[in-house]
Amino acid sequence: MNKKGRKQAVTIRCLLFGAAVLLLVLIVFGVVLAFSSCKKIDNDENTASSEAITLAQTSAVAEDNNLNASETRKGSAASFVVYPERTKETVEFSDEFDTQNAILICCDDDTVIAGRKEKEKMYPASLTKVMTLIVAVENINDLSQTVTITEDMVDPMLELDASMAGFQPGDVFALEDVLYGMVLNSGADAALAAAHYVAGSEEAFVELMNRKAAEIGLKNTHLTNVVGLHHEENYSTAEDMALILEYAIQDARCRQFLEKVEYTTVSTEAHPEGLTFTSTLFSRMYGDEMPGVKICGGKTGYTDEAGNCIETYAEINKKKYILVLCGGTTNWNNIYDTLSAFSIYCAGGKRYEPPQP
Image 1: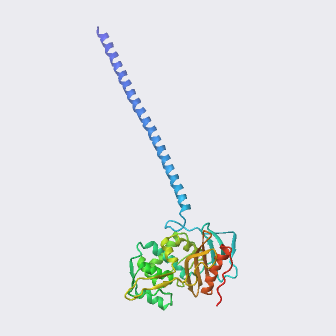
Image 2 (image 1 turned 90 degrees about the horizontal axis):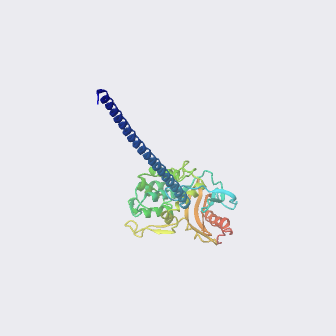
Image 3 (image 1 turned 60 degrees about the horizontal axis):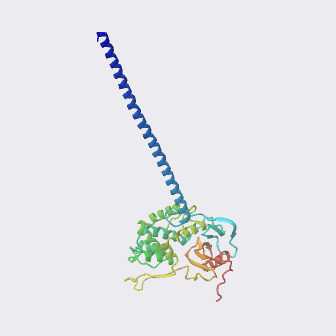
């Protein structure tokens, strides 16, 4: 082959080699591109799948929450109260009832059966202690733990002529004993003992009470003490007090105190026979005086400014009702009106007639 032919052969081989390299590059690029596309598709599918799963989980959680909201009514720490509504069947308490502010609600459907100035600001007196009970119970894990009664829990309350459970400075009693003394005897000494055990001071405990009121959704309640002593800023409404009681009775431990008729503490050196507490509510009624009405429990209260106050809950025709009467002129009128209200407005009965002497 001459020199010109050899040169042409080399040129052809170079061209063929270049074409082969270019083809190889194109093949590799194509493979990489195809792999990237597949990966993107997989990622997109995985993302879509994850989003679908997340959406499904969110929907499931929302559905569960809705079910829990309807099934778990008031009474747990995470729940909130539902204000009862007046309906076309709601009536005003008749003039026969000795009360300034009153409400009767059906807990089963959150309706107002009867009312009188139930949204008006009033002073709750010792009905305050139901909130004291709630906060104490929710912050005490073991009611058998003991607390020491001090002079600061007793002497100031004696000077104010407050209701007392009968504890003496130096007494050591179980918290269960203390709470029975607070609810049944409406003991101010007992209320202060519970407050100091839980929070270290009455002031700190009151903060917990107001925080609890906000947590469960109360709109018109503010508290300044654990006893119910009169103070311009210790106020509520009949409506709010009904909701506090409704919240309380969702807790079995609160109910055990509110439903007790009588309780005697263990014997101590200072109290060899123990201390006996008798319900200020059930010492004046049995709770079953009216046909079809079963009054289960409640709380009474009194101050000069608040008048006579009473709140109770009852079972009537398999439904649960709560009644609050505040501003009455006598304890006995409160009792008679309580029996009458449940009878007339819930059981289709008549007014209670006290036995004649």
